Length: 427
Image (cartoon, rainbow, N blue to C red; front, top):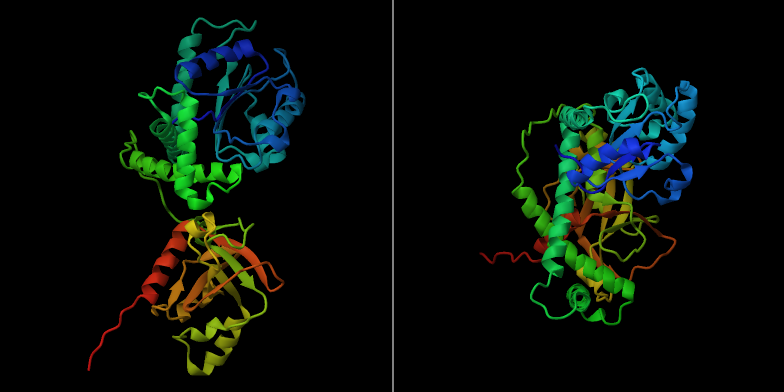
């Protein structure tokens, strides 16, 4: 069972005595959890959502042990679930129980109407009478029933293998972060106090990343520099743990494409970020409102009959965006070493034009298709339009997204190869 080990389990029950057996089992298995009684004053505020939940254990009746109409139960449940589960909490499964077996429609109705923006991907319905008597006392078979409950949850996760694998991946991240901290901040042979050693290591890591500007940086930037250094160690540890990971009873996932349009949307998440607060940050893409150099002239058009060429050219020009990509090395930005920014001009072209453009030129970089403003585009960069400038906010440029480090590194690598071609002397 790939159960969350990072605290992303919630128990919602107005009777903590009845929740205690579940807490005991989770504790024995070292699965951290958060308990909510259902009282609004003890629930997270809507502004404080910071931790997604993957498994929710929910008592249907958060009022008392008496019977109530569905509308009464719903009036109590909806505000509680709104405060525990955020609109961006996805994916998660819900395990709910009540003294009656006719509440499945109530849960479905809540998530189909009131809370459809945070709907679970899986449900498991249980009767509370399998665990407690009518007076609230535990049944004789309670311990066995609780263990059987975890077997049923295991079955629910097996029905959703992709979700189970995501939980497993999150667990690997948690373990890798723990391994990183142990490797760096464990000093078994030191005679000095732990805090003194930790302060020294913290500063040395930060300086290794920020360079000579570390000493003059603000405390916040010093801390972030250390975090960057630790992240590089963490990523190596995570990669090692993933490569040696063996998932028990693993199975292949069905990969039939339901909607091909999802590929550009997914590529946007893989290749781009909406974080564009600093124009000088590596990878920021700037829309050039007033065209200064026409990069589209460098494109070679193919598979278009001469009679249609002018119309194609006009349509192409009407449906592109002139952009500038900041390709300054990230280390220069972090260590504040760039006197000017390294920039390259390019264009965003709608995907429908791709098949008619020649992408064989070594001077051009063609990106995969990705979504921008709900339209599928691809980015073309012309290495012949590489230049430097001290980029500053002005009326002619607008940051639209940031290229993530992996695709930026590919662009930088191809740029380096383009400007370092030796050529051949021959007669």
